[in-house]
Image (cartoon, rainbow, N blue to C red; front, side):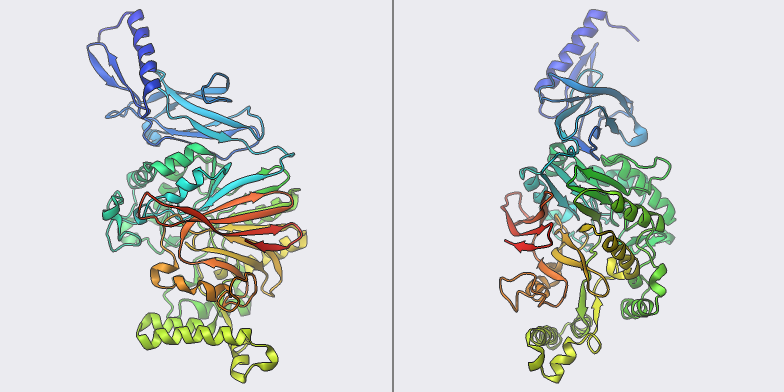
Length: 587
């Protein structure tokens, strides 16, 4: 091996830096000796996450093309985008062991400040520059953040991410289903337009192995809109089921077959490992990658409790046993008998962590970052029965019967009690026409643990807001006890791309659900099919833009008019403001 003279080596290093400085791709070609070497690629951009008042996680992927050699990196944090003033710096090494992903914890920062960061390889070739922000100081008066869930690559473009990057949000919160595990078969969920849109999932199979999961994350992180949003602000994330497999629980998943896909414990461990590799998360416990619940204090305005209701301690869903009625019979029996007391969404350890953390917080608001709908989405039995019949036998007669069941119930509910017919009184009565949950995978399937948490929060006198995802539709609802006492409210955001009620012909049901079919333009009337539901959009994709102060929390339901084209328009569909006094206004 020949050695270059020192001055020649220095010239090459300076040249590499100059080429990288004018590169728009984060990649540069560097002459070396008699041949050439390709400098580091930062193919998936940069990201930051899990901000605290004095530190933040920084992430990148750094690799030399066609090589598995390690890449020495220097990271820098500056108060200016030109990096004139470096306030924190350090070194790390990009290796094959983590699929060339890199995370560092940049410390020594100041609260509520905006910073710029980048990575440099050994030739001073820079990564793209990212913008990040520490958590606010106690004196902060306002916080603005965007909330996302359910981003299915093959279903459409991530226009909601693009819109949020221009929204003025300071932080991003992702509530799960950052990726989906399904293969590219057009018959699989959300894949109908994958080929036409040029968004075919890779690998082609459902992801199971270490390479599978890494390849899937790399595919998602290749999306320009996702990269741009990661580079624009710090993220706080938690997983749901599709980062593992559909309808997951502690010991299995609906979309896991041990006979063909191996042990669930193995797949679960792989999925968790790759999640920690690719997400800018500060791993709470390096010895237990399945533990990701954690807490963030946004000054005195709110404390954010990011919980894991999916993997850490969830018992098997009532609707996961193959019952003819979808598990409703066993659910009802368990609820009325008290046997549901040991049926859990999260472990007792996590539950205690959540409630003791809320008790200790002195912030005005307690916000729970949560995967699943926590509000009681209970439908009248006559409507659920008609819908079940129409699902099994979708004839015109049965479809009309569904519409009639809805109309009959809404009419009865809107009729003054003294004027109701016996039939209408029977429809309104919860004894003769009980309210039943439509989704036992959500908190509705774990009612006693939910009740325990809500009663604890009520006793603490805390102002509770739940942020929820998973459903693919936009909801604003009261969070109530089993006795109907309001303890908090829930902002549940629409999906970024995943199909919602509209995909099964139920998009037009929204006005019946929230009561605006009976009282047009009036939200929070309680006149809909679901007593606690105040607003719903069951058609559009988008995200939540939240603004929190000590006096109020405002949620703007931002929707994009299409996910099938990169050209789109974003607009606020509904704005809901919750005052610290409890008053709710709609705009």
